Image (tube, rainbow, N blue to C red; front, side, top):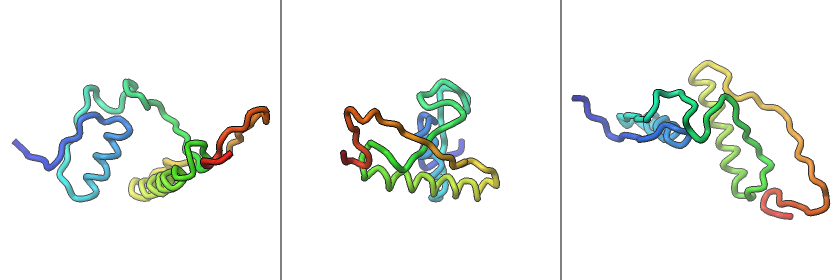
Length: 105
């Protein structure tokens, strides 16, 4: 029986990312999921995602979003496939009740 350093149980968004970075760090890893990945049974399934730098979650989140985009670009280089397609977007506000952007009003 082959032994591994680390087993990751659950290969959703977080589990898959953990498995990916652990393997890149030189660990022998095993990923386990209840279903055969890729599947549509997780909380973040589907083919598209949005990542944005102008966020209402708080200013400290911007660094995570920027790092996320760097990781996508590195994965594109490693795989030779285009994975990240930047596009524009517009957020509209009624102006009646302002909402926070970058942690401020």
